Amino acid sequence: MAESDKLTRRGFLLGASGIALATQAAEGDRTGLAPLTAMPNRSAALLELSAVEAVKQMAGGELSAERYAQALLARCAELKSLNAFITLEPERVLEQARAADRHRAKGAALGALHGLPIPVKDSLNTREYPTSAGTPALRHFRPAEDAPLVATLVGAGAIVLGKTNLHELSYGWTSNNHAFGPVHNPYDPTRIPGGSSGGTAAAVASRMAPLGVAEDTEGSIRVPAALCGLAGFRPTTGRYSTEGAAPISSLFDQAGPHARVVADLALFDAVATGDHRPLAILPLRGVRLALARGYFYGGLDTEIERVTEAALAKLRAAGAEIIEAEVPDLEQLIDLITDQVQNHDVRVELPKYLERYAAGVRFEDVVAQASPDIRALIVRDVLPGGPGFVSEETYRAAVDIHLPKLRQVYRDYFARTGAAAMVFPATMVTARRIGDEGELRIRGQSVPFDVAMSRNIAPGSTAGLPGLVLPAGIADDGLPVALEFDAPATSDRALLALGLGLERVLGPMAPPRSR
Image 1 (tube, rainbow, N blue to C red):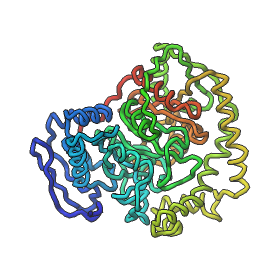
Image 2 (image 1 turned 60 degrees about the vertical axis):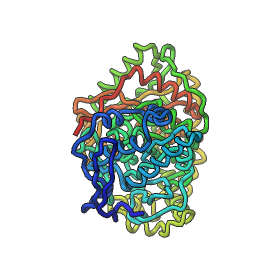
Image 3 (image 1 turned 90 degrees about the horizontal axis):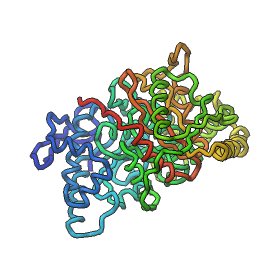
Image 4 (image 1 turned 180 degrees about the vertical axis):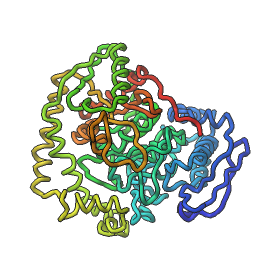
């Protein structure tokens, strides 16, 4: 099995149309796929299938898994310039698709994800592919087994559609990876897709797959979903296993899905939890949604504000009751918890991960070989002697005092408002240009890039709440704008049911323009 950076020239047949897609490892090409010059109409239609629809057709015999995989691989080739993948092995995907077809032909029981190719963020362990975490020291690390979540998906019939690019070590919101190259936003390739799960988001938004695996510590599912016009779901912390994933903090880390429709998020949730009970659409009439304007709505870009207010008007017109109420002490609590926990825990948990899974490198090696931007961040905020170093005393106060208070504040908030979820714009701005990561100008004010990306998404993941991101519309720059809905802890299925209703009211998202 060749690694993506060692691929040799080869070819394979794509589809009943007989189109050959040649693969060649050109200088800098990490996907092993060459551009496709034309795509049959049937293939284009297959790309628009949801995961639910694709599995239904493959399980029913209307569509072969091999044919579907061919269509997705052709799309990966056509848009390889987005740099969504670090590792993609077409022959392996096709071989597993053919095995899925043989399995069905035997009349064997089929899993809920039968034949479905799913891209996996390259921070989750996979037995058949390297797991780099987007950092040079782990470029050739091959785990002995799949992460439990990946194993669950594969056990349900899924096929791993390669490993997706990400912000290095998941430590950022751009996916401008200096080791493996930046991921590009399908709506405008000069823009970031968001991070850290930018490769998965770019793949799903550009129709390389309908459903993908992402991971979120402080926005890494939700920011890319927002900037790429997707539905993204970060479940209650601990709902899905995060074993076998390169960690930042077990208090905050949580894997989850990217998709284009909420039904596919619900399918992922059913497989990941084993709870396959039908999920009914929750109508919006009479549903209470809480709005904390003081924290989440201040200083927004004018287009974010315009699209957000138009979306809220749609929700009100559909019968939702918008309750305005502030969350007490929210900004202060986030300032006392979020960065302190992450910057402390990564220096403890990442070394344990490297040892447990026999990565063959130490934490010190990872830091030494990291790209300059990530190495500088770690030296500044993680390692002893840096100005942002978190002492044990500060850490214990964050975990033992402030975090329990934050969780109680949210419990009280939902009880007081009677809200099914809070609603707010996911980010303060649309996708910025790649490399534009310094101070931003928003309505004449200077705003740090990390604040514009993380201010609104940090509270929910810090408190461990389930969060659902849905597209709200398109800004005048042609880029997506999204709303986030955070719900009480453990109310994941209720939030997904609400999402099915919200999606109908907010309307479909315009796809990226064909290239």
